[in-house]
Length: 100
Image 1 (spheres, rainbow, N blue to C red):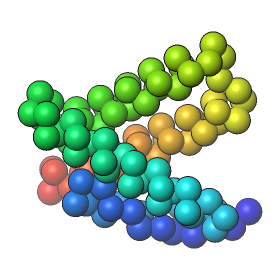
Image 2 (tube, helix red, strand yellow; image 1 turned 60 degrees about the vertical axis):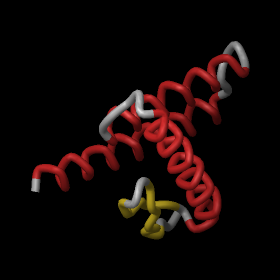
Image 3 (spheres, one colour; image 1 turned 120 degrees about the vertical axis):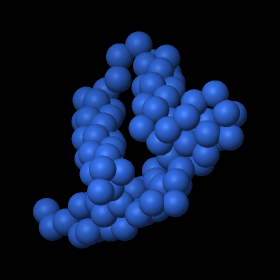
């Protein structure tokens, strides 16, 4: 399956993500939700730093998924794995930007 490079904006930073064309709308929706959740956590003032905020969102989302059903389906597990991989990649790129 072919991949497009899609630019998403999260917390005023742009990230390039490889994505199949038919999944672009979902990626944009996920990025918008992530941005909203990260901004909410940042505005609470209890968590400082983009990396820590991203981890809190990931923990909250995982908790919600795990409590939604006893056992995530294979599709949900695959989706979580892909999101985690994209999050790890985005965090790595963010760290590189902060170093430079």
